Amino acid sequence: MSEDGYGFFEDKIVVGSYKIECSLHEDYIHYSRAKESSVERSKIIKNAEKLELLPIYPVFLPLAITKYVIVYFTEALNIPPSGNATIYIKIPVDISVYAYDANDNFTVIDVFAVSSVKYALYGPIEEGIIARYYKSEVFLDPVDPKLGEALARIKIVNKTDSWVEIGKVLLDSQLLRLHYKPRTWEAYTQEIAVNILARDKAIVNYLDKFVKNVVEIRDPEGFKPPRLRGSNEMIWGLR
Amino acid sequence: MLESIVSYMSGIDWILIAKAVAVAVAGLTISWLLRLILFKVLVRALPVKLVRMITRIIYYVLVFLVLVSVLGTIGIDLTGLVVAGGVVGIILGFALQNTVANLFSGLFLQWEKPFKIGNGVKIGGIEGIVIDQSILSTRIRGYDGVIHRVPNYTIFQSEITNYHGSVARRVDFRIGIAYREDAEKAYNVIKAVLDQHPYVLADPPPDVFVVELASSSVDIMVRAWIPNVDGLPWKARMELLWLIKKAIDEAGIEIPFIQTDIWFRTPLKIEATSLCNKDENVDGSSSK
Image (cartoon, rainbow over all chains, first blue to last red; front, side):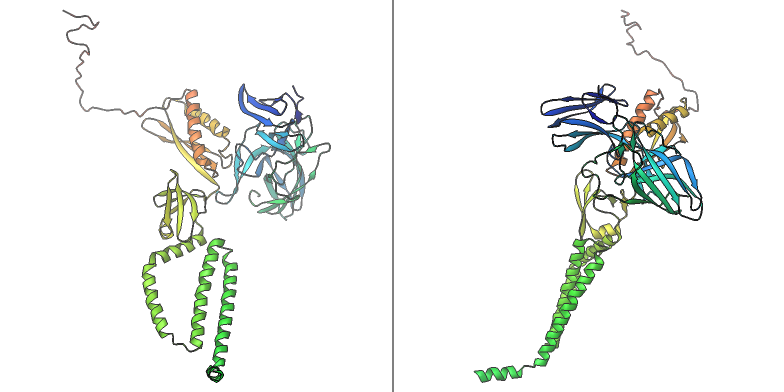
């Protein structure tokens, strides 16, 4: 049995309610994932040398239908005019299995969720967007994320001259960067800045990582456009 | 010989020729510029293929007008040409009536964009996916795989339903439970299925409520919003009906058959007769 947590594994490992097994052969690896004795995914990966478990952006299950993640706060946050607040929230992450060849080229062979997968509509029915849904507590101090979660530090700045209530945040997974602590189930995003410019406009900027001794995941090929920085807008959901 | 050439050349009105050349050069330049400007303006609103075709037609019409102007400048009488053009125009007008109607309808449809290629639509009696749209007609692949070519004029005059016009779609269905069953228990069973299904949106949340106390059942209405991508509303509807039926069965809740109570104004005399042969006793033995 391999040691728990993200990172390379060799034979068996338990991830939530899933039991993952791999057997190494001369020129291939046999991989299988089972839940309650029922095999849900089984694959032969030719010329693979090793497998690695990593957190992945929660936008691939059951089908990739969006790139957005929306996190609803269990308690809305009220911010005074020209005020700011730094909070911590949890965002969902799914679990991916990377297979590497001898030249360190990788491919993602499996993605699965350890918590329920739900989506929500952000905005009106005609022009809104579908986003992966998650409900998170709002923490004022950092907490340890559990399996299937990543901790995000959000700095909210109210640049308007009136009180603003914010109860959710929309994130673009193509601008997120996920980090993990090897041999633990802890995952983290980078720091995220939400600048509220008006009641109908907030800009979400993606900054640098806020935790030390973490490793950034390598993004699946073709998932992200070639850009380092970016932002997304929130035009609904502020009060 | 030389003299005759000189005399012929001197007989030509060179000023007129210069005027004609000037008209031709100016006309062609203006036509080319107009084509370019129109392309740049129209391409913002219409597909490139269509804009290319429109600007080409306009350009050739302008070139024709320039040619007519040049001929007029050098003194060629165009009365016959105008008369002939008028007659040809009337004939073409009648002959191409439908084509022109389709063409302009196609232009309006491209402008208005009531649907896009790949959208699921219902136009008149045809339902399917739009696979191609040209200036004259639109091709729709029916859900049964049959390809329909619909003239744009027909589409323009029809009621168009676009199933992909919104980000999410609501699926509705009624579930009837027996009167003796606990409606709240049924509500909780249905709600649990909806909460577990990934494509039932958490926001807007699904609605589950008693919609009617019907003659044979208590009818529960289920309304759930589903992402309008890749035919998910249809797939989710099928899955949900199946999962809810299973969950209701597992919870021991009865989905009743239609029951009808018949009331007779006067008491009925019912004569009971044995199903057995008259010659046989009830236990099947012969009385002989």
